[in-house]
Length: 254
Image 1 (cartoon, rainbow, N blue to C red):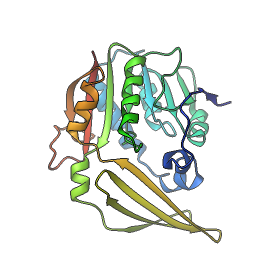
Image 2: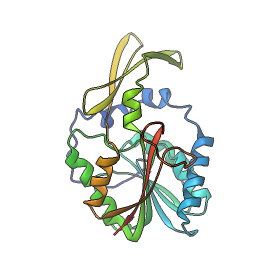
Image 3: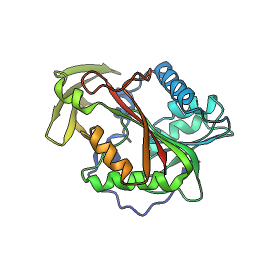
């Protein structure tokens, strides 16, 4: 049975993440995400953080739990949380002692749980239209962390993405041709996904705020965090706004 954490934030029925992430098509399109890459990245992060074995960690916006499983294999007590019931249902197949999964909105505090570290990985931030919602996420994480707890955000390097937007492309999965186009509207990086199946046409738009280093610095420092380090890729090389693919931030609760 899926454990659900009730929350008071009323979801906008048109919120793209609430609908797209819960479809079978989303899981089909992204079914080949690299588990070995996830293991390597999480391993690198944990070596850097030096978290003691047995630490309580939260994988916030965990999807099907690939990073949660790796964290658990490294000796941590892991809670994976995601808004998508379908993702959590799939993740639950791997649940075991010390590894649990719950349906939860990242803007809210999980009742009666605290953590030594919170991981928000693979551009799982900035989904909202209102920047105030980002602050809700940061404040909730701050509340859930123990004193001196660590918060890891892995985001895209938005400045590089905007400069190097990919041309439209077609990806075929499960006999379905997904036509994908990216663009930038001045605030969000948009990923238009169009396809046909069973005689119907579908159109979904992934919409992520183009948050940059200064945006994260403001969000974190104004909401109780100190940024300790930044990295620019999964191998934890230093962040360089001109060339880095990722913006990875390690912050500590003040």
